[in-house]
Amino acid sequence: MSAPVHSTDAAETEAEARPLTVLQVIPALETGGAEQTTLDVAGALVERGHRAIVASAGGRMVAALEAAGARHVRLPLETKNPAKMLANAFALARLARAEGAHILHARSRAPAWSALLAAWLSGARFVTTYHGIYNQKGWLKGLYNSVMARGEAVIANSHYTARVVAGRHPFARNRITVIARGTDFSAFAEGAVSAERMEALRRAWNLPPRQPVILHMARLTRWKGQGVAIRALAALPDKAVKPVLVLAGDAQGRENYAQGLDTLATRLGVGDQVLRVGHCADVPAAFALADVAIVASIEPEAFGRAAVEAQASGTPVVVSDLGAVPETVLAPPEVREEERTGYRVKPGDAGETAQALAALLALDAPAREALTRRARAHVTGAFALKRMTDATLAIYERLAGR
Image (cartoon, rainbow, N blue to C red; front, side, top):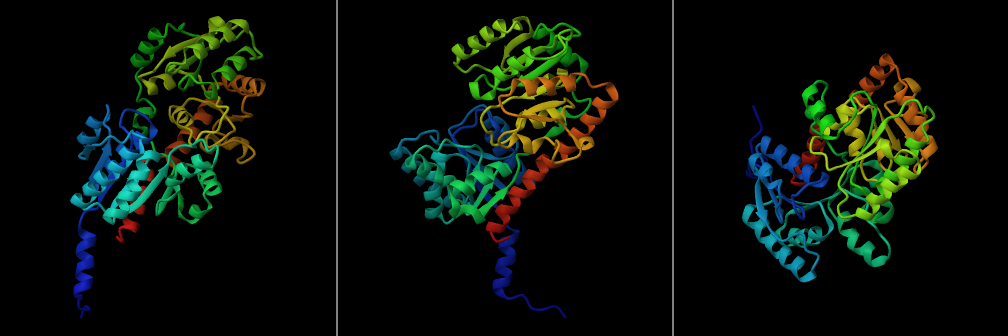
């Protein structure tokens, strides 16, 4: 005979059966990694029968969010004006109460302060995700940044980020969970990019048909290391092989920096081998076209998106041994040589970078195939989209008492 179900047990069972309502808060939905993660988590919530709401100032990604079944609420969350941030807090609290939100999940600092107060006013549980390594010079900046460590659960997108958060905000040490950014790898899978797409991109970039391509996929800014890549190109030991270095990324107003890269390439004698192509709309085709990819950052990054996408595309990669990027590439001494998925090099060291590029360019077909097969298996396992969304939803369910 089964045990009787008490009224409190019945209420708890009924509560557990009801869908979760999660309100994510982000400044805008134009473009970027944090924005894509917001969409991915919203889509996963809807797929599981939960309710997903995103509050932002809007942007080009709203249509995709709504197509996934989530709701968008427009609020001026890009503002850093204290009075407007307070008004946003009251607006978010009203929204959370009206929708019965269980979770308020903030993904950026200014709206996180609004969301923190809104969570307190509405009774929702407060979650934060540290998507980047914020500048922290001075106590006032530290106080401003600290809101991202005030979640009941603090999600760090890499082990490197987690160490930074714990070091800066020791009070949050026991609430940090590492959930690496997940990617839908279907666009990067073997055979996903047609020969026609690669040829179209080659023509658009005016690339010679058989010239090896080294791809640097990042916006044009000094810390992304385009200058290091150019110096490494000039330092390649085999002068008979003349690869072209494609710098794919917007200058975003940094025209003096962009022109300086041209000047550097000319001065080093590789002006005819460096090609600035601006924003690339077909990233999978770009990686599929490339013979080697390079991530030459000279300042720490919170995650290594380009390195992950390159490996998923079957493109050998060289990365700076700095920040979170090394977490995405397996290399000795952490693994055996036969387990390598790419090369890690000293940040800013053009000579060491050139040696790694040369080693990859010189791989014969069987060695290249073995390396890229390992790399694909590594990233599609460790950085799968479902792995990220499952882990995130598990945090929501735990905080909601599910």
